[in-house]
Each structure stands twice: as structure tokens, then as C-alpha cells.
Length: 273
Image 1 (cartoon, rainbow, N blue to C red):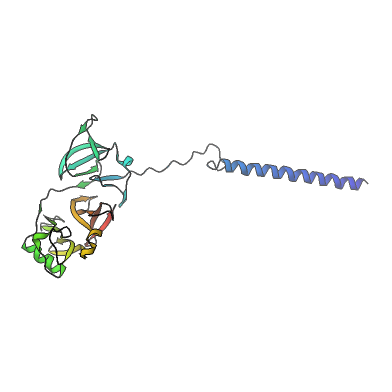
Image 2 (cartoon, rainbow, N blue to C red):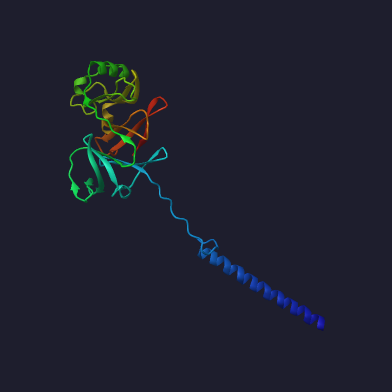
């Protein structure tokens, strides 16, 4: 009889131990789920979000770009606002101002007074190593007409070019005058035998074609046209980069900017909106 009582008592004690064991670990797990940031260690400080300090570039009212560790990305307006920028208007230095956005970018001086401007705007953050040269935009001459004819493989009527841009500039600072040529007849007022976009660089007397679009008449409305927007050098690059603005006749695409960098001996499109 005593033996049976001992067995019963042992069974009861084991059952009680199981209940307490289950209760303790279930409640511990629930507590960890309710406070996942602590990982069971009180007093541990939650990890702060990483703040990246971008160099910033604003191009007209179209592009807001950030640059860090050799890479570009697009930025939101609130990342740009209330920072001081070096501002160029119509390719001329305009001053250092804070930028705030309304329907366009607005300039404010150190006294928070509004500063009016008219024309094209490019701005970069104060600590961004950017060089913006002065240059003139001219039209094609006989030399460019011959180059364009060779690249296209056929003749064209230079008087009907709707985009006609030539910039002569020493792109790599070696004493040889280079050039960027950007031409198109997509918006010609006359009927053309051939429609095209063409942009090329002559660097140290060698031609590098960056855009070569042969366009059928029925496709004109779906193709972009390009404008040579800005030339600049940044991040201690030894060769100037340039920005082509891309626009459309219709709603098939949005206006954007394309950055062309000199990489391993060639100009390539390295970033766009």
C-alpha cells in the first residue's frame, strides 16, 4: 500500500514540474516576441538608421541627383531643400543659395530672402567638387557636315536641322580642342528623306558616337529629341562629362537628363533619371 502511495506522489510531482516548465518557457517566448528589438537584453540601445551624406546636383526643375562612393541615385525634394548650393544660371555663376521647392526651385539667401532668377539652373552642394566651364554653342560648319554625312552614310539638308549644337572645348585639358556635336531634324518644318538624332564627340581627333537614331516618319512622335544641357567635371575626374536632356513631342515619355562620363577610353551613359 505504501509503495502505491509513493508512486502516486511521484507522478503528481512530475506533472506539477511539467506544468511549471511549460508555463515559464511559453511566457518567456511571448515576452521576446512582444519586445523583439531588445533580443532579451534590457538596456541595449536600438540600432539607429544609417544617414548617408550625399553630394547633390540639381539640374533645372527636372533632376535631383545624389552622389556617394562613386555612384549616383535620384533624391527626393525634401533631401534637397534647405541645403546651401553653388548656383549657376544660364551657365554663369550666380551665387550660393538655399533651395526650396514650390512649382520650381526657388533661391533664398542667408537672410532667407527670396532671390529671383530667369533661365536654366544647375546647382551643386557646397562640398561637392564640381567644375562648370564657360563655353559657346555654335552651329555646324562644313567640317561637321562632312563628319555627319560620313557617320549617317547619306547626305542631309543642314538648313533644316531642328537641333544644331556644336561646342568646341578641350575635354581632357591636354591643349587639343575637342568638340561635342548634337544634331537632329526630327522637328524639321520640311519633309525630309531621312530623319535622325545624332550626338558624337571628337576627342583628340577621334570620333565617338553616343547617339545615332535613324527614325521613320511614322515613328517621330515616339522618339526623343536631345539638347546639350551642361558640361561639367566632378569628383576629380580628369575628363569633362556632359549632360543631354531628353524630351518628347508627345506623352510617350517624360523629360529627363542623361549623364555621359568618360570611362576606359569611351563616353558612356552612366546615369539618367
